[in-house]
Image (tube, rainbow, N blue to C red; front, side, top):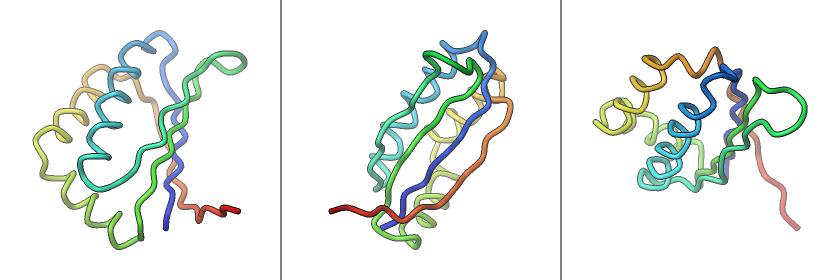
Amino acid sequence: MITIHLRYEIDPDKLAEFTEYGQRWIRLVDRLGGTHHGYFLPSEGDSDEAFALFTFPSLAEYEQYRAAAAVDPECIEAFQFARETRCIRRYERRFLTPLFE
């Protein structure tokens, strides 16, 4: 199992746009074989930082998701939405192995 942790630097004046972007991706990740654990938006503290977590059964299945997302019309539209609105300034991606009891 592999969990992807995304840290976003967002434009705090475009939180509504980033929220729409996140809502799109929750559904898309789930549709393409992952389990999305949600987006975590600024509340208190830093106003320009957000996070997301989603899991795939294996790194290979994550790579299949990446390939599918690159050609999926809804995914392409979501990427374009972020680009056009400039709600995301930059992001970092980390791969984690979850530990459960």
